[in-house]
Picture (tube, helix red, strand yellow):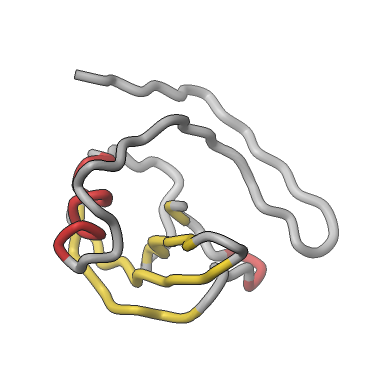
Length: 99
């Protein structure tokens, strides 16, 4: 999971594992378990207009031996995670390039 914005106090599952600089920003890496390992990258400075290379995130996990290099991304989603009250997502553009 890649968390771009922490408004309202929402946080990732698990505990902080470490930090990494990716795409010009600092990210905390968190690891949790819900019957399988869940890894979250939490951007330290909120943003609403990211341009990201997902391979940078998966390779950060591989370098830390949190993910093996024979795994691959099987789906990409975007949205909000409402944990209290109501939520809203306004999207003007969403694209993924695979190459």
